Amino acid sequence: MHRESAKLGVAMTVRILIAGAAALCLATGAARAHDEHEGHAGHNLVGKVAFANSCAPAVQTDFLRGVAMLHSFWYSAAEQTFRDVLAKDPTCAIATWGIASILMSNPLAGNGSTPKDAEKAQAAIEQGRKIGAKTPREREYIEAVAAYYKDWGSHTERERQVARSTAYEALSVHYPQDDEARIFNALYIAGTQTQADQTFAAYGRAATILEQQFAKYPNHPGIAHYLIHVYDAPPLAQRGLKAARLYAGLAPDAPHALHMPSHIFTRVGAWEDSAATNLRSFGVATKSNEVGEAYHATDYAVYADLQLGRDAAARAASAAVFAVPVSPTATLAVAAFYASAAIPARLAVERNDWHAAMQLEPPAGKTPFTEAQTWFARGLGAARTGDIAAAEESAGKLAALHRALVDAKNTYWAKEVEVQQTTIAAWIAFAQKKPEEALTLMRAAADAEDKTEKHIVTPGRILPARELLGDMLLEAGKPALALKEYEASQVREPNRFRGYYGAARAAEAAGDRKTAALYYRKLIALTKNADTPRPEIAQAKAFVAKG
Image 1 (cartoon, helix red, strand yellow):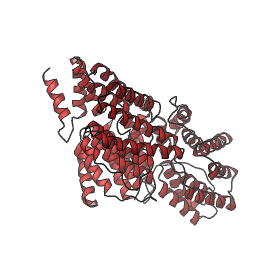
Image 2 (cartoon, helix red, strand yellow):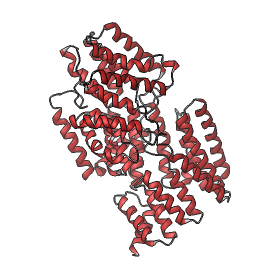
Image 3 (cartoon, helix red, strand yellow):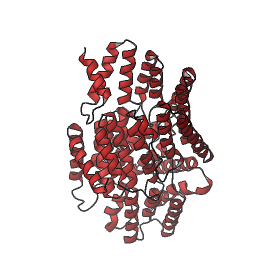
Image 4 (cartoon, one colour):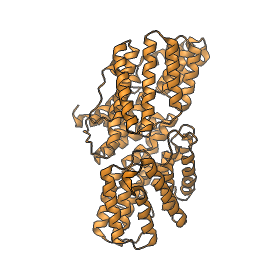
């Protein structure tokens, strides 16, 4: 599809989809942000922060805008802003802190700075030291970010995260009245959280600090942003709704600010809200050439639309984003590559279109964990259609990708791909008429997946393993057990189309018509604004109509 026509298709979809309460909430927030920023004509609407500094009066507005952009992870724009500040005021050493902070990239993604960016950051830090900050506090800010880059090549990203967190905690203790130091301290504490720690200890420490600051500064973009991140886990998500509904309106020109509320909306199954805010994020991201953000937002939007039965909207969003080329050097390129693999996979497997899943090809610019998403969908499609040879080919590809991730010491994604391997092995065994072996493998995959959280690059796994266990139990003629697994899956992945439909079918097969009706009604309510006929919806309506 031609890029302009694709964008037009999404624009038409947006006009239809963001009507109602979700759009009103977002529009109100944007209007409030505009009112608060009307004195900043000609500047991006990115929120207001207070960061004391000794730079020239002429660069104060620009410097503070750079800090606000940093808080919303608008990296390319913030870096340029800080560099412009330094060009206008060569004595503004604290601007080099801003540059080095930007070049760490998303501190919550676990990827860290690239070698090239680390070199640029270290050059900025040395420049700041050479200029000489005018206050001890500003010098300590520069040294705090320098802790992350010290002996960069000889440390793991985990070690760099801990060093950064320790340095910012010391900074916040040394300057207890500096609320910006406390806010950044909370962010970098959150950056030490691992997906395997389901006590969410680091998130809890960060949340305590942020909630105190939120009471003082309810319109601070960074506080709202980081609260969304620290509550981005199934047992915590409800606590993040206030910040999620506020954040998009605080920084309406920052693509990431428009996207971030959907992390909470996804966790609680608020799909209308998620689709609306991500479509807005896509529009702002493409306008500002933030390709990674555009793809990342679209992955979340497609995921949301598919839960609502809005297949046409999902396809329109997909077509629009795939008209935007991705460069390996683009900001957040990894997020773009992940979405490039995940979006087509979701469009196939969420709709049980196993033949389409078998035809998928890994996108350009692939990395081991992004390529794995394609081979997982292909393998699942092949096994579900009985093509054992094709499924085994996919299993072999996943095994090779798993080895590559282990060799690269990418522990998290190695475990994720291992779960995918086990899942494909389970469905191959099922296709080979080995149900007990298949169920043992599928249960092992579900149990392993439950021990870690999803990565922030994705709204969710291509399909939840426990939901797939429910599918297998249902097909194995064990509907009562299947229902238990569907319901268990919904605790972590609420309000999912396939989850409701699977639970309804399982209850119906088990003779529990009351529970079946409950889930069929949930599916009907979920898809009340569906734009594509789906047989599951028709089946739900027919069952309920029979009383």
